[in-house]
Length: 456
Image: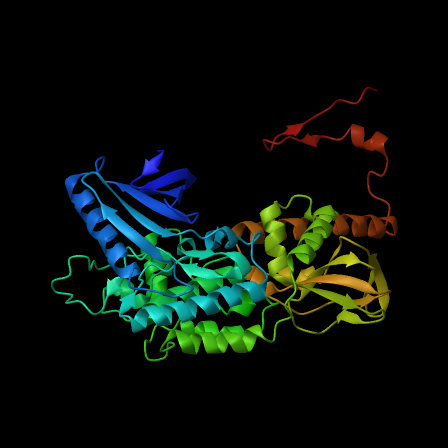
């Protein structure tokens, strides 16, 4: 397309299931705008009618909102076969780019962005507007992490008569981000948007949703009936206060949830200013490369190593410090990054472990008992990647399986070496030399026995 109405098309910005967004230039000025185009012609009459209503709703609602953290809408035009919305162009990124475990934003940036969204949603509700579809794809981030809430196509105007409002559609929104009352089809207020924003914050901090399921029915059941995990259980590096904030944001009981966006923002600000504002990306990349080079992580996928970084804590341990002790009960375990650790039982040395070796994995792997039967003491300054067993239990099935696989493989290798040491001190075997073994019957894989005749 060369032009959309009076706007000259520069390039395509993105394409979705129902709309295409173009970067355009406004005539008579140098201002660049984003123009969202919806085609009606290729859809059925019913779908086209619904899309037309939603489009008109977005234009009417968004033009009423004038806030620095809400995408401005300048014009809305509906033609016979298509319609287009002229909006502020946000030169930045969408939050959906930063919800994967290996793409997470530094903590202080994520909290700052959600803080601004809280204020924007509060301003919208003061105008009687509920967004109803808050999710990462609908939050754009421009220069200086300036958040911009977009896409008010599913917004609810509380100032209109809902009985006659044909744009009011129950059950709209994205299921994973919908509040319990939205799923149930109950009357909504701004608390439903704050719940959805809490889900987005949870995902930005942990790389996963608070409720996960393999099918939509199970997902809906969990959203309505189960509590989300503590955010620090999934990422031990987060401040403890975030647990209380997210618990309140994701409350199923409306009376216990944040009353408005200002309350939510106020609590976030108390955490944000406790966080050191440094770019953690470079440090995370360095830590990733260190783990990637260790033999223990050879079979891990990149995404699984990023997940390991989120469920672990780096500990600098001085020499002569006991990491685990005989007789204690816990499931703490870790991987030695640098340094060395001595393993002993009853004061007798069992082994010395170096970089890439796991420490304390026995209690983690045991299906029932977390009792420690050995002591691990650092021999020199040691950097230990301490893995939080509780957070690991809540991580992806792929990581959990790969971690157990690697720990078991390393434990079996150690057991084989111990067996050789024990065998060296044992009694001679009945058939101790290769010559006597060659004439013995062999057990076949099918359970039978091969008999070999030894020549006289």
